[in-house]
Image (tube, one colour):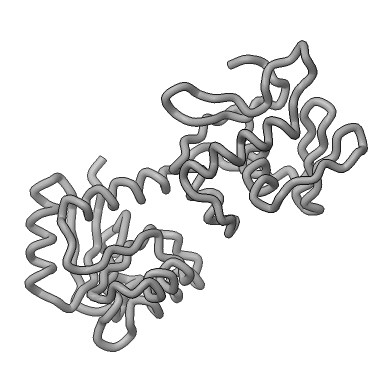
Length: 234
C-alpha cells in the first residue's frame, strides 16, 4: 500500500528534495509551505502521515500538532526542526508528535522513521469495551484499576497495570512491541522498547496460571506477545 506523506515546511528547497526522494521510493507526496488550512490539506491529500516543521511562519509546528490532537485527529506526525535541544524534542512529543527528527538529517533515516511510525499505527482488531475482564482466578477492573485473585488484591505498578489492560482488551490478538508501544503511549504510560519485556516478565510472575494450564501472556515467536484468557497454549 502506498503511504501518502504531507510535508509542511517553509523551506522550498528542502520540500523539493524530500518530495523527489520519497516519490523515488514509492511514497505519494503533497506539500504545504505553512500550516494554514492544515486540516483541509490533510483531507485533500488523504495523508497517512505529516512531516511537520517546528519553525513555521504564522502558527508554529507545536501549536499545529497540539490543535490536531485537540480536534481528535490521530494522524501520525513527525516533527522536523533545526532545533536539536532536548527540551524541544520533549515538548514536541508531549503535544502529540509521534517522532522527532532534527535537521539536517539523512533522508534514509526519515524513511525508516516514517515506516516505523506508520507500522506502529497499523490498526488491529478493536479493543473490547468491557470494563471488567476475568481470566482464571483473576478479575481485572479497568475502571477501578485493580486486579484481584480469588478476591485478594494483587499489587501492580502503573506500568504493569497499563500493559495488562492493553492485553486484556485484545484477547488472542498477537501484538508486536511497536504496536504495544503505540497503545501504551495512548494510555500515557512510560514504557519503552525492551522495557516491555521486563514488564511482561514481572506480570507473568504475578499472574501465574494453575500448574495444569498454559500461560496467560504467551510469546509469539519472532513477533511479540498474545494474551490468552484460558491459558491454552497457542
